[in-house]
Image (cartoon, rainbow, N blue to C red; front, side, top):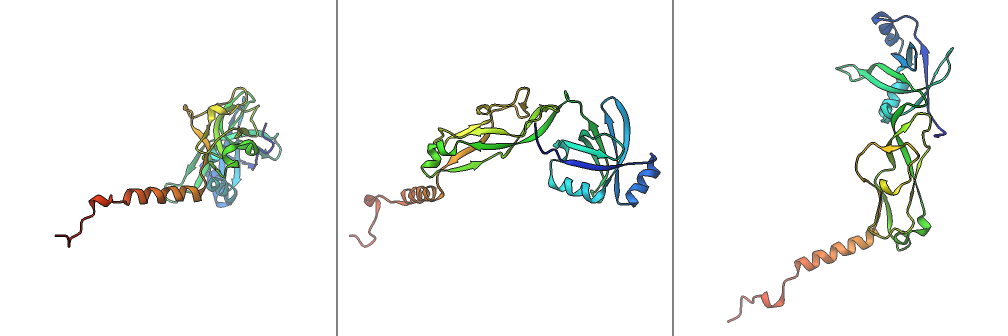
Length: 217
C-alpha cells in the first residue's frame, strides 16, 4: 500500500446553502461537500490557495487523499467533481467521496525501473527512454500499491517493455485496454545521428555514369 497518501486539510462548514457558500468564498475558502461511506454528508471549506495549487499540479481528480477535518476521523476520499467559475475558471465548489476499503478507483501509480545492470542494451550504450513514469490502474482503495516494477533485464537496443510484462498487484488492472509501452531502450544519440547522416549521404549520391559534362562534344 502507498506509504504517502497526501493530506487534504479542511474545516467543517457551519451552515449550508448559497449564503454560507458565498460567505466562505469571501473568506478565501472554497466550499465543498463530503458524501458516501454510509455516513451523512459533511459540508466543508478548503483554503482557496491550497486547492488551486493542487489543481494546477494536475491529476487532482485521480489522486487519493487523506481528508483531515477537526472533530472528525480521518477518511480517505477522492474528488468526484470541481465546479469552476465560467468566466475566471477558478474553483467555486468541490464534491468529495468517502471510500470504503473495497471501493474500486482509478489512480496513477509510479513505475520503478530495475535490472539496468542486467540490460544488454544499456551496457552497449543504449539509453532508457521512459514513456510512462506512471500508469493509471484501477485498484481497490484498501490495497493501493506504492509502485509497480518494470524489469529491464535482457532488453536490447530497440526493445520495449509494455504493461503486459509487469506483474501487477492482485485485483489491479490498467485503465487502458491495450498493451501500451512503458519504456524502451533507444540507441545512443551519437550513433543515431551518425546513422542519419549516412542515410542522407546515401540518398544524395549520384551514380558516376549519370554525371554529364556540358562541355563534352
